[in-house]
Length: 350
Image (cartoon, rainbow, N blue to C red):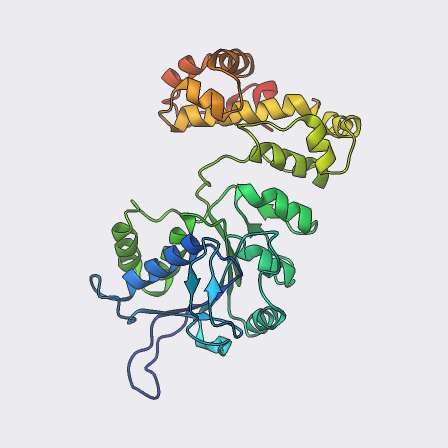
């Protein structure tokens, strides 16, 4: 990933911004992703809260639409058409709601390919990663997606390896972000790289973030995707993760991947030595363990979030898997370094 040498503008003699980002907004784009990215740049661009575009600059582009609609209904007017890629250090695609029609038009997709050919790094923010993948621009790259969309990525792109255990991923001239609050961390990382660490800290401080989280910081929800195995098994485990609080029947999971319950059971026994129901229980219990370690919520509330009818049922299953009651585990979980790898093999997630 390149860092541009700052030179005075030939026409004005003024110093060009150190960091320039062009934004492509998909149909029904995620407003929070755009606003977090932009505000991190804005606060780093000038002293105090003056918002002058001195150190950073940005442009919202469109192939011709007069307004771009966010998923919440708010409309944004673009600043310009599709400008010369050389005007920017990065082109960021802010994704929209999946499965609600075409995200970008053919002209915009062709523009993204032109940016890639020009060597301009492309950023897929939230489901903007899907836009890049559909344009064939993630070939040879891993991509970071939210744990919530892990299954969607696997289902649509069998040859793409999604990563859902981190906030964002920098892979050469491709950067992909899981979205959410992690967008500010990604933007701050770019500010740090081009403008300086103090500017990045200033932005996050004003936005009430304690510090910049690195790219490999975990997403604030665990993922227990097996490292290997068939794509079908991985899709089903992803569905289990997305439906922890209200577990799906095994029949529904099998139907979602075009299998019978018996066929799905054979796959899971071959992969894990256990049927789908047992693996689903492990996914939910390990999520409960994660909540016990990292939150102050009551055991009863954690039981509900992990998909158990009550605290007693959760407690019995938790003790069977981890060898201690939830309360006992919480009292001794000050050992934050006690990872799943330290557990007996039959009590590990995957």
